[in-house]
Length: 539
Ligand code: AMP
Image (cartoon, rainbow, N blue to C red; front, side, top):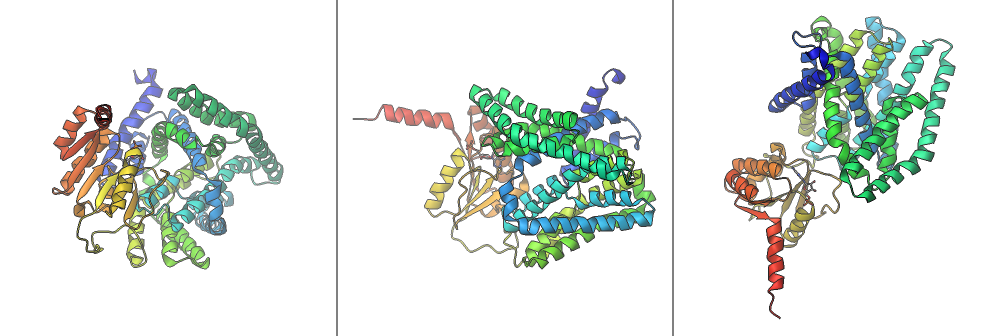
């Protein structure tokens, strides 16, 4: 029976196991990505039991890469990059060079070719966007100067890798011989033709299509249009210009990023992107041969050392050389001391092109998993070293300023939360806002306001907001399910706090009350009340 439906079997097994292992990772306070990779190892050929279809898994993974790259393009802001270019560009390039040099060194010791060492070093040089953004977000430093430098640095790395992905097949074809020049020239020519086509035709056509669809008023059509553009451009780029799916998708995203509709476009593709990105990690896990850990412990230790120690030292020295503070240098070094999705793509491609041996790919995969696991540890070391300088979110052992009254924690800074915050700040209250989207307009810049970017459903966010010392929690988000969870966790963390929540209907009011809310307010009822008041106004 499974033979009749290999595609369904692969998707179902991938997503279900990713869910189970992801949930387990969450419980163990590990990044979910580790869970997804483990799910892949479980359905891979190197572990007993069910073995998923590798070639189908690879194709599904490719969809994940397209959507991930589309997302990177959508968030690629030329302005952000320009503001940190003086350090980000040389920093990233020097760090890549150092990683490549160390990769070649290790490769030489292991007896691989020079080209193999080059690809191996490249794969070790680029940090994971997913891991870096999450790390910075969780620690509330994404919007600080050091956060911006880290992101700019990452974008430069990403761009270098996009170029590497395009050039690798050419290098493999050229075989390193004299034919290499023309092959690279041809590849670059195709890339330039594609980029020119996108900038001249795509730049006009894509926003025009999207605007036309927006005016149709159909959300479903808008979502379809965004997906069709992302996938269509990626596929077209590969078919017509011979460039990678990834580069095509990146450009489709980058062109959309200029449109005011980009935020909506990003949101519309998010669920699908997440689902396929998960399948990407699962399929990478399937490739991983766990035996490398037992068989090549020294090579693996050296690989991890290059990622965690070598790259960080290089980054740290470069940032210091540019006369930034020690804290900035440490933060950037820690942010980049991991590898992830790009490394997987490079290693997989390098192996398929026969540039690196299977062992190199396994070392990259094992190195990625270990470095991602070590990353939170590095950040806590950095926090400890730089505690005095770090204006990080206050932790339990930072003695809070003695205040007569506890502060207010406000979840959500949208139509409801922004109004609540403005009035409370005006009244002299101290307000800690937890908001999931960092692009929300008009976030307050007020000495009594503290802003945490993140999902309030995560207990860590509530911890950081020092819920234990707060006197009031206002949950001003529209999703009843999430709001219920936040209320439940808050009540558990602080039995004495007053909790006021925003509800959609009576069922939610009841649910919130059960979870521990003191007051739940239904928007429609308040509208009705004000309407009635107005209607019955005397005179
Ligand atoms: P509005 O419906 O206009 O009041 O907007 C609600 C706001 O709450 C939006 O800005 C969302 O980004 C934010 N939001 C939704 N869910 C969460 C959550 N779980 N944690 C933090 N902020 C959230």
